[in-house]
Amino acid sequence: DLDDLRARLAAARLPEAETVRGAPPGPRRWDQGVPLADLADVVEYWRTGYDWRAFEERLNRMGRFRTTVDGLGIHFLHRRSARPDAAPLLLTHGWPGSVVEFLHVMDELADPQDAEAPAFHVVAPSLPGFGFSEKPVTTGWGTERIAAAWVELMGRLGYGRFLAHGGDWGGNITTV
Image 1: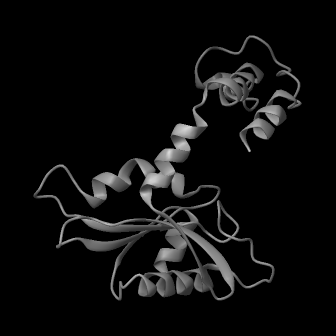
Image 2 (image 1 turned 135 degrees about the horizontal axis):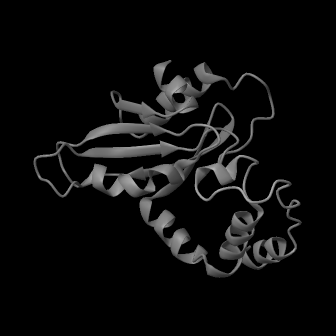
């Protein structure tokens, strides 16, 4: 829950500061990794400034679902278009990503402001072990098995044929 998260953030042990001081401003200041001041700012923002409930509401508005495929609980977002000509589109995130990567484009893909633009019924599953999908307890959940699970998922949703896009590992899964 959020109180627990805030308590853990308040108790977080941050690493020591960078050993080389006086790095120039800009990207070079990251030469030793995340600058301690930047990390401390992010932790404080997450603890006191970020509106977790607004994000939760945004995520829930998309249409969050769970199903079981091949014995594994799979979480997915499903944003159906209002347009009758919409094509099914499967979006697969990569590592170490999540379906959150797609939140900012799902509405526009489903119901574009431009009436001439194509529309899509967007499905974005969380990879096994990511987000709200279960972590496999057996080996064998590689790209081919995940791709087969996505085909099964899309079939259950009534999409025998669909378009697909993936980034990073999602691209490998999509290619299979």
